[in-house]
Image 1 (cartoon, helix red, strand yellow):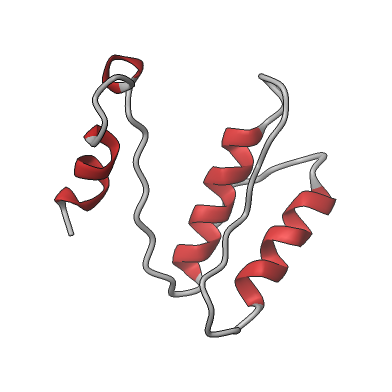
Image 2: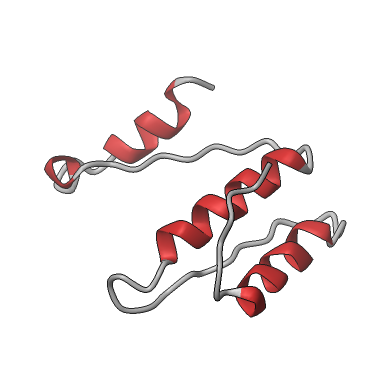
Length: 81
């Protein structure tokens, strides 16, 4: 069940439409904005919805300490696959 997100109906609708579109091509969504406006919450909701729709989801969040390590995020992302 997707987490409850309030005040972002337009953004959630857009993310739902991207997930519902069955085009056989790769897609991407860029979530931008100033700190504290809910980007991480929107991303979390989108990832949860994608899993519920049956998409294979791979995600990682490298720490600040790993920022200078070129492939740390990629290793974390693909390590379990």
